[in-house]
Length: 161
Image (tube, rainbow, N blue to C red):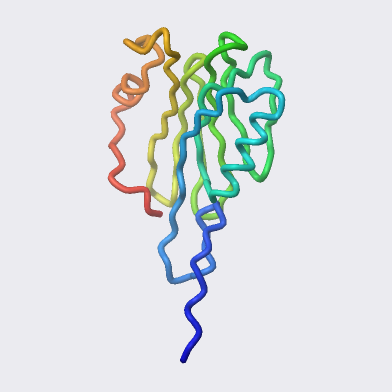
């Protein structure tokens, strides 16, 4: 009788302990409800435990540029919420030899964007939060659909890298 094969291990940066497997990235969105007073760091620890390589955190409520920039292996790119009581998003990602995050941008207090690149392939990533009182429509200058349409980028069909 032989021992079972060891389980596949994903270390969150797209790398694996099995060189024959195709590389992948785990992407998540997480409404953290409050990134102040340790909430951001708690969310990053949870994402790290789940092996997430790229995430968008919503309802961060970060204001005045005061927040953690690096934690648990993640880099944090956050918007400034228009109020300490509502809104704000953050793009969080780990460095990886298999993929990179480029051209991070803020599009108002509730939208972030970037490019996920791997070799010659590029994928647009847009993270947005629509606060409850304005759920019927997005402002035209911060709409993720409008941002993508204005750049005429292809829609990714797969994120296997």
